[in-house]
Image (cartoon, rainbow, N blue to C red; front, top):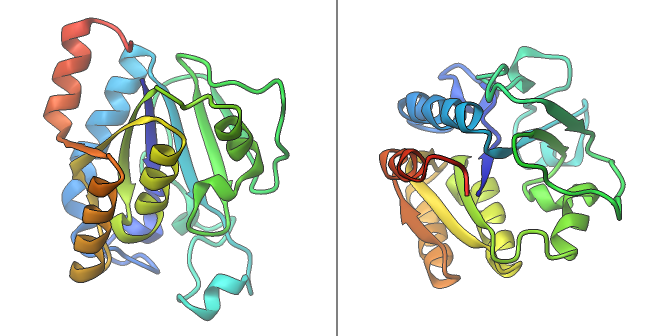
Length: 206
């Protein structure tokens, strides 16, 4: 099992964030619960992190947000999961020897919606590391970065589970369309409680 924690940063989650996702505050406790159980049970976790510089091309579409070095760019639960961590910059190169280790936390920076724009992570996908893996996806925003993650993993052959009560989208129509698109691609839907119960029942992260 691998957790995918998508863009849970202050600028997206906080009500006064630079690009606040509507109702994102309501999923904070579920995000915290998922990251906490990941630390307790040693579940490999990949946290994507939007990491911008002033004047990045995306700011022609959206207001400036997640500027490196600002609080807005920081993850809301910066210390979770409590696991050994590895940070990958947005321009990290693909590594033929890379792998996802159980009990490790990977923080993967990116400059666009798709977390697989990070060559290091996409290199793992191309090596079929996620093929057949149970991948639990949560975070923001459903109709942008979460969508890109869910569809990218499904295309890679992963068993993708979207945690419905731990995601929020920007707009009602595009969120609904994105959820349907993911369902069509084979993404299954679950809840925070269901994920945690399953982990506790098995007693480990497999």
